[in-house]
Length: 328
Image (tube, rainbow, N blue to C red):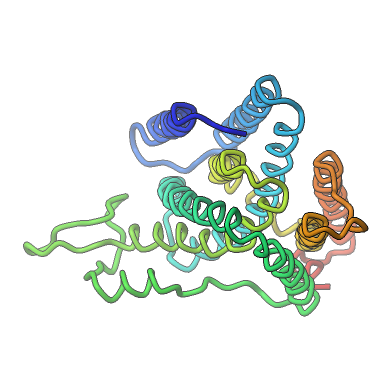
């Protein structure tokens, strides 16, 4: 799909306007906790916005491109649910006050969106020149699927990686011991210092980029169209902040979600390898239609979510804690 520059500008500009309105509505007045009512409204709004965009793609470009967008959006949104576990850990580790968590997530996700955009541009250019990268992407996704299942079976807990960017900020800039409202910098005794608010925003944004190492190859396994890849990522990230507050403790009840995500990554990994082989002249290797991919991805998330909730309900009757059932 050849997308004119004005369309890129219009979409990116529109997304920024929506995020600005979101920030203005939520942050006006005194700082306060993000309510379930607000979270429900904004999650529904962003999902409907993504659906409207997908329908627009369908009208303008046909069902195939629309299918690629919806498959990519569902995949990225599903993988983002796993990121929420890490966001909870980061918020706890940095003891972020609840009334400021929504702002931390918004700025952190904006940073992630910019960095993912750069990542997508590099990946798209590389795949055009080096088609053999599909084999590497496929193998990487299969390995990632294996490690997810392995770690889940071992009951290993995810931790926040202390990445290079975070270490550099800590080392370079003097940091206050406590939060100063929602400020990211403050002047104390004539000296400019950063607050833990800036540190946690960087932690959210840079950690999300690390998780994009598997989600970006996954969506490239569904479509190589940079516009579809970017917009699917953008819409998935935009709704992530509200999903964080909406799900809350429900995340602990999604005990089978890791298996579902592993299956999706494994499926896309196999799909990448098969299509790369087909493109290389191996006629026996099938090409998987986008309709099949969309059905497998959507069906997997529905099955694993329903199975998780049924398992949690059963454990609740037996008096088993969610964390215990998740490690079993």
